[in-house]
Length: 483
Ligand SMILES: Nc1nc2c(ncn2[C@@H]2O[C@H](COP(=O)(O)OP(=O)(O)O[C@H]3O[C@H](CO)[C@@H](O)[C@H](O)[C@@H]3O)[C@@H](O)[C@H]2O)c(=O)[nH]1
Figure 1 (cartoon, rainbow, N blue to C red):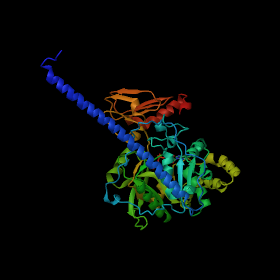
Figure 2: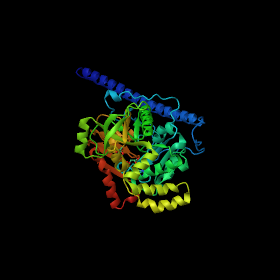
Figure 3: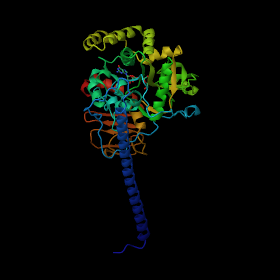
Figure 4: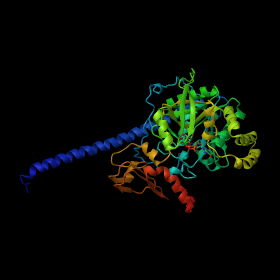
């Protein structure tokens, strides 16, 4: 039967709408495929880059004390987060906002093909469980072993890859607890066993970095060391390597050198560096003195600092002669210095090391490097800073993890398979579908949902720093096996 005359124009409109919707759907589909292609391309570029780096390293015959990379040990994939074919996640090329000032807008270090710095040792202190990322991170799978942005590498592996060109495999070292040794060696097959410094228990960053300094200064009295957290994300590798190379030059002049990040908000979880005079070093044109260093100020003080425009966040990276760090420890925390000297005296003798660690380690003072030496040394004019122009994030909690994922309007960001999340009027949050089941949400903004097979965690982005206290509560409630 023919349609009534009055319905004809309506049918026309409906057909048009249908066609438009169809075309839009097709476009969306193409966009998804394009994103996947880009992501695959990025992964294969990365593999190619690593392959080229390996070839270059194998061909390097002049590497001092060069170890040949261990044969037969393959790099283990980082555990826990699932891999899926339709990943849409990308890390923006610039993670944090760099300084708008002209002074910092340049910084391209004049690298030659070989970036290796003779006598430079990398120290990666890998401690802490990253409890604010529970239930993604666990005591046995801490944050640094996780591939939090699904790039195929854990944060530790990315840290290693980033710094390898400067030190070569023989001068890359890691300090960690015994529970993580196996995971670390599995993920870093080219880490020499003698360069994994195993501490009996967590004693905070001064003891960890101090232990590495005490051992390395005995192996090489002229050693310049750089300590870099195992669990940070960085974008802009050239700018990063340029900053570290300048920092090494400044360290050789007898400074404890930090890297300063332009702050974007009055964070209370970071150290603040007040910029002092320029050092006017030819080999490190961006270097400046640090006129003061304040570790983790309160919110009011942080806001005051920000308003002056004179402060940088401390990126938690320290570059210095190992001998200077030992001197600073001797001056500012003498008993810790004594203890570490006793341990390092016998370090290369396995049996004696075991005895010394058992006797001395439990007595050591638990203090962060920032309070132990950075604050007092800055007051004496011994700390310098290289202002950074690379993107940086310490991936401290689910809110900062969310920042790294592309925003989608009226939809939470998804770390994992986006098909497992169906939402309606839910903006600004982050969902991590690990268990594989479907997650649905309606009308809940800024929500954080982490769905692991054995534990579900729900909070808001605003409270994601407090996940730490939730973990404490779970422990008190007898759930230690899930932490
Ligand atoms: N091996 C080992 N490493 C440790 C230990 N304690 C801390 N670390 C390592 O030392 C580094 C810094 O320690 P955190 O405890 O994570 O420091 P933070 O609170 O984040 O503050 C530091 O980093 C901020 C940037 O993220 C800085 O802004 C701040 O000034 C400070 O340096 C990290 O790589 C951490 O894994 C430990 O007992 N053992």
